[in-house]
Length: 533
Image 1: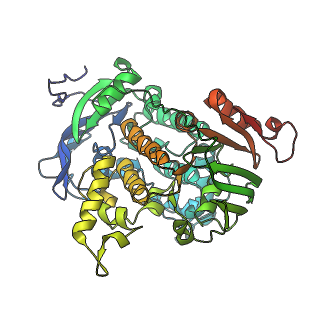
Image 2: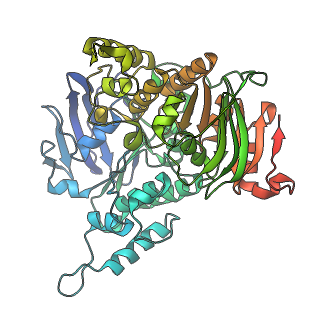
Image 3: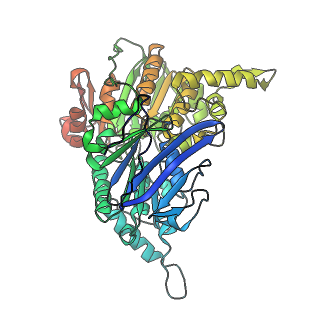
């Protein structure tokens, strides 16, 4: 039975006595620096059921997951039962937590270690006679489970050298490795598909369904609402740290689910195309060569939002990395504002007014021990100094202005960024560059792991920046979003620009056509591309 929603829009959990409840949570709350991020949340995870946990960024989803896995400890008053027995949530360990297998939003992999060793850390290393580690067996086991997820290659590669997509697959493999032999398993997936292309998403869904059929309880956290109707049996929605309600998925529509998450009716994401054809050329790239790109050239106009699309490995990020001085393997002739430039470092890029919101926001976009305030003001401190010293009053006021403008939650400038949800961390990264009023803003996968409400906020602010002349380049695997937000999209395939799309021909289908078609979409002309508008 779906829970009954009160007039305030919130619900008290109705306890269940069903025998199939593997894990029951009651009265879970959590406070950081005086800010309540979870407020008296209760839920049940049942054997053989995929239970989706949804909510906007800052709603408390990731905090609940981290309490479940022992990363955070809850405030006083929380209770939990596992397999019908009362268990302790107030210690990081416990035998019952061995049955909880999680894929965290930040993946939690050990970068310098190999793929095989990362999997063995969770499973236990294979050994030979005498107790010596059997590296070959660990590599064989890793190869076997990753092949089921569509990933092959040398299992001795350091995880830190892999793409975000490949790292996500390793994290998924680690969580499901040996799942079939655990009769009390709870599988927790926090934004597991955020960096995966469709083929790998479907392979993951097959693994989830297989686990549920064997009696595993699955908790599935995602911002991609269409996935919920494909994989989940039941949905719990959190908003501002409180439980809104719980429903069978079959009782919901995607529009109703979006409304429950944000607390209001959502309009379709859409922005009017800017007329940038007559605007001055802000950036020109000629003959960009990299291991993945074969001499591509294009222009970016003042006030334009330019998308770069392509399949995984097409070289989308080679462009943004080159422009921010992070790609030693790429070479090109660069002209900014009519002047020839060389960008050899991020410092050089910043002097030219370029900002980068990287795909891996935690590793590259933020200094995690620092607060939101310090991260927002870090790129430009001169305006905050008095007599050579930073005015803490000015710094706090400046940061608070951006926190309020982007709706960062919790709205406390002193909170360490490592305690923010993925979407709120992304808002902090975006704030620090918008504050500098960049001439060129580079956005890599900008809304991965960001809820529907925050997406509109981010794109609205990006569009506001273009009105002031900022030119934007977006690299993304979300083709629907590129269509909704870009003036023009370049499609990469086979190392070249296979099409330049704008106007009525800019659709997800045309992007897919030219991304998949490769050289066949170029009319046989070396280095040329189709311009469709």
